[in-house]
Amino acid sequence: MTAIVLHAEEEFDPGLPRSTLARMLGDVSAAGFDALSLGLLHVGRDEGKFDESWVIAGELRYNDTLLFSDGRYVGPPDWPDTLARAAGTQSLRIALVFGGAGHQDFRAIRLLHARHGAAFVDSGLRRNLIALRDAMPWLDSIELCCEDTYDHDSFVAFASLLADLGFDLALRPSMFREFWVTAFAALHARHPGRVRRCHLQCHAKGSGNVPGDWATAFESAAPGFDASGFIIAAEWAENMPQEIRESMRGHAREARLGGGAIWSLERIIANGAEPARYADAIRAGLLDDERRSLSHTEA
Image 1: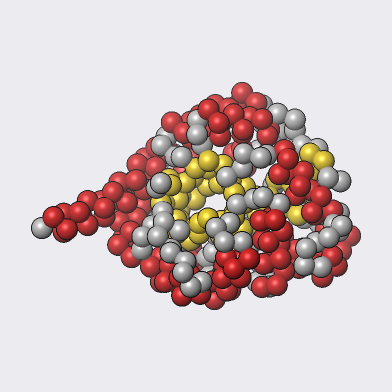
Image 2 (image 1 turned 30 degrees about the horizontal axis):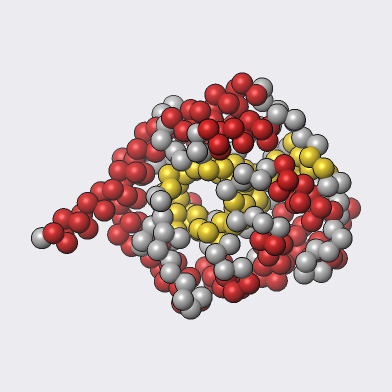
């Protein structure tokens, strides 16, 4: 299935009225997106001074809203149910993005890994992730956006913990291909099939990324792995829809893409554009290359 993915952050703040959230989720689906990546999920109650006391409880928040503490959901009561309804009635696949640029979540993970061991045994983080699983069993995946501490052992241990708890995973790399490919190989060996896709950033710091090169690297690192449909090429809304279409057409020539993504809803709104134009551009770019391939085959 080709994925047309929208990234969004503060627009789906848990503190918004339920009716507003429901309307916005309906708008995303009506615009032609079939997947929504919501960010950002963080470790710690706030972004205060970084030390062990800041992260030891393993609390989880969505942007500035605390969601999970002491193994319980403590966020706004309607938020999980509102998202669940959209996932069910509108077939909108919803992921939570963990980490993100400018944050120190994987530094926190490294600290907790050192304290609690590879499985994060008896940690508050593990209890809060179990609470996340129980509160949002319909989540499509947890998307890992590491842009701070590229520590292989703690990253793989954290991702393995998520897999052990039943979460499917997605990677969201921008740079340092060797780190991501090596981590994927380790995860694929331990949890085959759990890492379902790679949302490859092809903008900003990832503007030099070629999806085909990444697909080849993943296949080489994990013998027997077929990268067909694994990579979602992600562009940004700094570009206009026609530019997105051209980019997607080019990316599709380089790899057997599983779809395309746009970052982010905030930028689309700031540009005064319609989200549907970006969903249409992604889909059209992918179809352009599909039609080109078919015409060549028929010729």
